[in-house]
Length: 202
Image 1 (cartoon, helix red, strand yellow):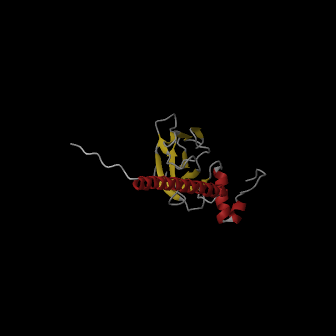
Image 2: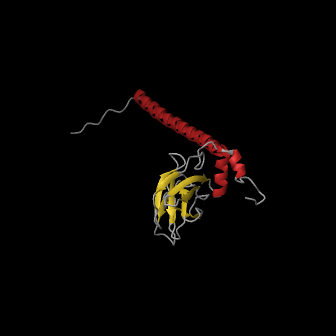
Image 3: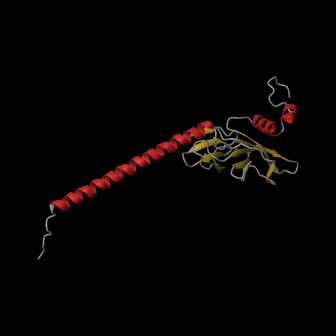
């Protein structure tokens, strides 16, 4: 035998309606707070980015860094340069030349990977949004990245060791990057080296 619960009194019904209204008001209030916080964060973030306050690969200088004693053709090595948080990669291409790049994608800063088997020279690939960069130039060849990868200037010594000696920002030539860094550390030497000349003299 089942018993039916007694019908709520008018006072209980009113209390229930008040509780539901309070819950929905809290939910709306919380929602508006979240929207306002996210909007404010986006405004501040976009202002900081547009003002150039955030660190870019290539900012700052560092002494030369040996990244490998030897680097065979078609192989790559990762390292941090010029700072400990600047992820980079050196690659020896099939023709023997050595190139270096930041491994931070210019789209949304995901990690860029080396895919040796892709194409004649391999490719640099960002798995987050299918961004692809040329292994030879760092230029964007597919996907959403808006700019080429910043370069790391690589040289090889007489013993075959590979060194990182400077950086160039996205779209900047290696020479311009080295001159910019030299001008920051030794303006007189930068002038002697011909940095900043526009007459074609060296």
